Length: 72
Image 1 (cartoon, one colour):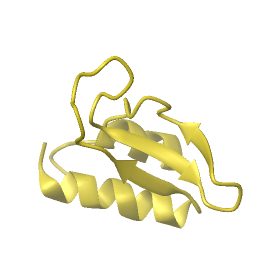
Image 2: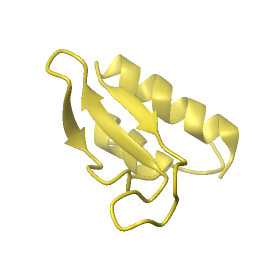
Image 3: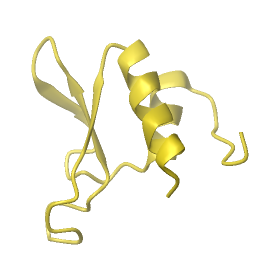
């Protein structure tokens, strides 16, 4: 996955008042898939991607309601 798409996902989440956390620890374990989790910083609770299972495209779509074009 391109780095710029990861950075874009983080920027879009920040604009939506969320934090996009990415984990690479033990990819493909039973409860951590190594992608993104969205956290609400005001309550420190997970909003989506409870198992670090959201791709960058899913984060962008969740935060903007716009489908993502990889070419963009």
